[in-house]
Image 1 (cartoon, rainbow, N blue to C red):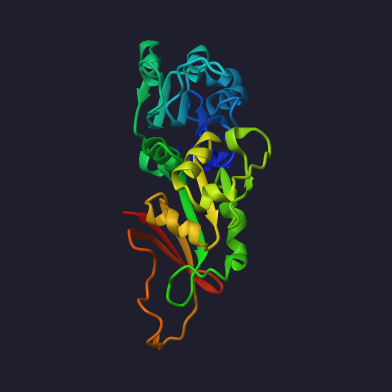
Image 2 (image 1 turned 180 degrees about the horizontal axis):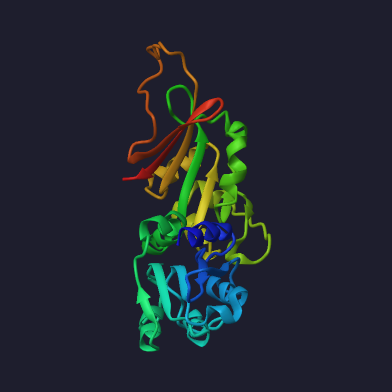
Length: 291
């Protein structure tokens, strides 16, 4: 399962509105004979890719998958059907699919005589599927705001171009859309269709937060990264629309008085709790999740 989780992360940022899923096929002796992950909407799902790699060796074996196999016909046939046709004997599932239609893939697999085990390393699988699941639960994209902070810990409006570039490349690849401080979507694969670039009108970003979120949701994006420290993003945070913040604090003296004019010194904005603290080459990186 940990291997399935690891390879599933290769689909982050390109599968929306579908989830990034990974699958490993074991033969009847427990040896790995195939693996696969979902790349983008409309293309083969993780189970089909893994079964294709395994071929006949999947018969009587086990499919280890990070999300419950789908049970409906869409752009691709249902994965539970592919597993049954491959004569897989057992399926281990990490996370049950809240979007599953009808009885669900797990129930139909069991009806076909396949042994099914659920919630296998669920917490670890949610390291990849968590933002997708949060988007479903919240009815909107999971939104992260990344910014450089001043010595007072507050977003620095003059440092948008200096946001920890050594970190940005890896972060960009994990989100469906990346929105710059100007309000345009500078990167992303909304709906999983190529490298289309979308632009939202600045008025939607600055004046009507609900309209902005509705427009972003319409793209099919499940996760969005807001890049930069601008007033509009602060307003979105104040409206409770931001789920996670990543703040980069500059190094300070080991003995320092903020002075009378600084005001309240903070770590992350109110309404968030620290979930990670790390040190980079020149900053301290704080990650906070909405409480």
